[in-house]
Amino acid sequence: MLGIKKIGARFGGFGGFGLPARQATACAMPVITSRGGALEKIAGNASLLVDSGSCGSSESAGTVLGNSGLRPRLVPAGFKRSTRFSFPT
Image (cartoon, rainbow, N blue to C red):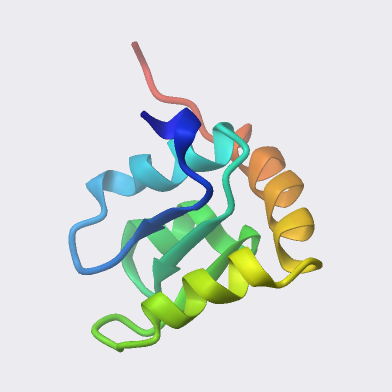
């Protein structure tokens, strides 16, 4: 499922311990997430952060998809950041 998406976006207070952000960055997808909580800690500066509860999330998706310089910066940064975290299997 992740392989067919162009971006990984997750908002709100429930971050699944940051796992959605880690999975998306490991699949070379730029991540858009809300500030605060586990998602921001996992995605860090390798993601586009928006205020939780703001209506800027759809604008942020358009920014990542339409900005030719942002996606090429976020993808390798996110992939590199994802290698810092491991989850037991």
